[in-house]
Image (cartoon, rainbow, N blue to C red; front, side, top):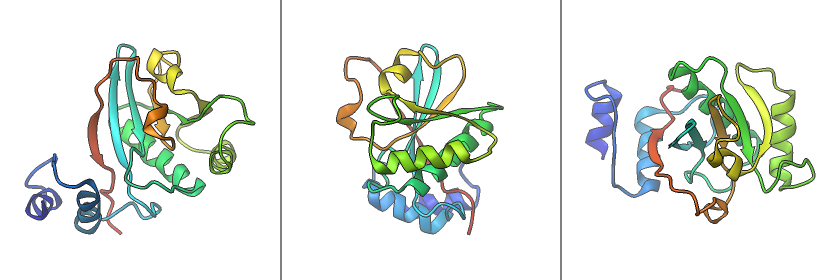
Length: 173
């Protein structure tokens, strides 16, 4: 893993796929590749291909006790990834148990407030339910979703195969 990260850091390879322990891979990538300056905690991303298009989901497990400021950072990282895919105005939403403002945790409410106030290069669409993402109801635009829910809450009746896009920690401190 460390040798592969060395090759990735010096540009000898363009991507890295590993079967190593996730915690070890995230820690090693943070040390070898660095993190975005504004990102306190690394994020794992999954790209999910659906009939209507692709969705990037952040964070799928690198950090389980995210704070509202972490979610705002994940929104920026995910939207940046979308711009690298030539998506000029990505849409960002937060997975929640409902679209209504009264639902969800205090962390989600604070992140929602911060993202509504923030002027950015992406369009924040508020709370979204997972079924709306996976059914294609939020398309045709790309949607970057901030992930802060247990995997058991994702609908299991849909057939999709997520693929890990990588640890989004490429900007050096």
